[in-house]
Length: 247
Image (cartoon, rainbow, N blue to C red):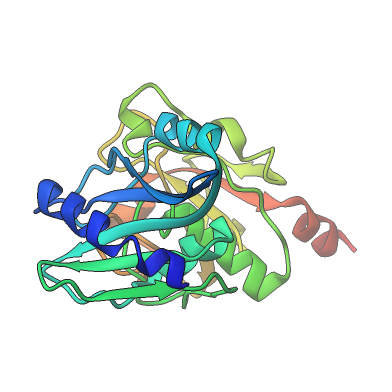
């Protein structure tokens, strides 16, 4: 932890250059000791950060990555929900600095289960597919694979839900035309929202209720009907649930 805190002046200098966007970088253990490796922030919004993959690869070539660093702009250094989820994924400590106050905090990696309701939207970390994965893991003890996804994949030629629902263990049980009576709790509804492809997923909870997470909103329960019914292009069901319902 002390080694990461020694990097605070360098991270703060980087934060000043990047503000009002968040800065991001890596703590790299080299033969000369730990160094701060500034990285490009590829996130689409200023309130988030995404380290450029080529910067991460270059840092790995220089030494062992022993920490992730980033700034909170005009906010305290308190770890966000997305920070806790991401730190657990990386398995290394995170150094967070508050710009311009200079407050700093080190977040140690630990298993963190974000609540299913009320989570903020951060693409690739806490988004509609992350919510589906967490629901299946927490409620059904079914582990779903994660898939790399750049923000805006649905307008950049990607069709990830259609391409990967079978890889995640699901089978299609209905297309855009179906009777609501066909739906079963835990079905996943794939929707097309201001997009040329299916780009939003929701879990059907029963009683015309869905669990989902829209961009720029908190995850929530909602009534399934109207717009969401019209936006649904496919209904998929996990193979394990298909097998259980057949017995």
